Length: 90
Image (cartoon, rainbow, N blue to C red):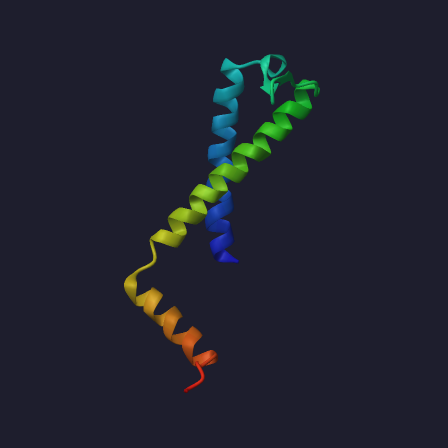
C-alpha cells in the first residue's frame, strides 16, 4: 500500500500542475479529438484532462519505482518465485 502512495501522490501533484499549464494555453473549446471538435462542457473537459494527465504521470511514477530496484531485490524476488513453483525435473 505504501508503494501505491509513492506512485499516486506525486503523480497527482504533477497532473495538477500540468493541467493548469495546459489549460492556461489551450481553451477547452479549441480541442479536437479524432478530427472533430470536443463537445463536452468545459468542466467535463477539465475533468477528463486531469484524469488523463494523472494516468500518464502515474505510469511515469510507477516506471520510476520499478526501475529503481536494486540487483539484490531482483535476485530475491527471482529466488522466491522459483522456490514457490519449482520446475519439474526431467
